[in-house]
Image (tube, helix red, strand yellow):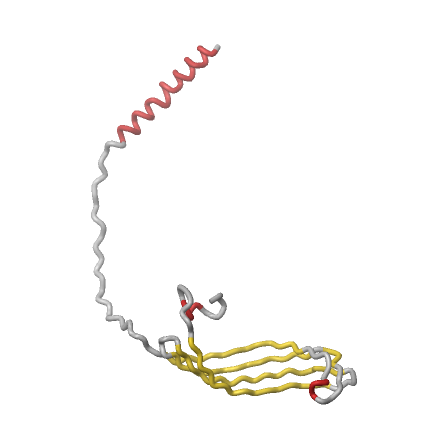
Length: 154
């Protein structure tokens, strides 16, 4: 039985696989004509200034706030707050970056928190405005340095 099975498999290979193998090797010898790649005209690009240069920038900030206080004894009064307050903060600024890591800007911020309620039904509202002059130095600590952005890890 094994001899018969071997003869049948060999016959099927001789009829099907052998001619296919021989045809594919015949096609492999054909030469594909060479076509050179196209030549594109490259425009002249302007010179790049690699020197350090400064830039002006605008900045802004928006934030939400939740204020919780346990007691008001630090302010000279004796008050216990029964509910947290909530509020917001907004700010704008204008600055200049020198190009070598040094920055300076002026910012104006406004902070407002309200609805801090005391146990004796008084409501406390906190408001504050501030003008700051800031000077920063951005250290180059990685592949992108200080230009990586505020959402990344430096």
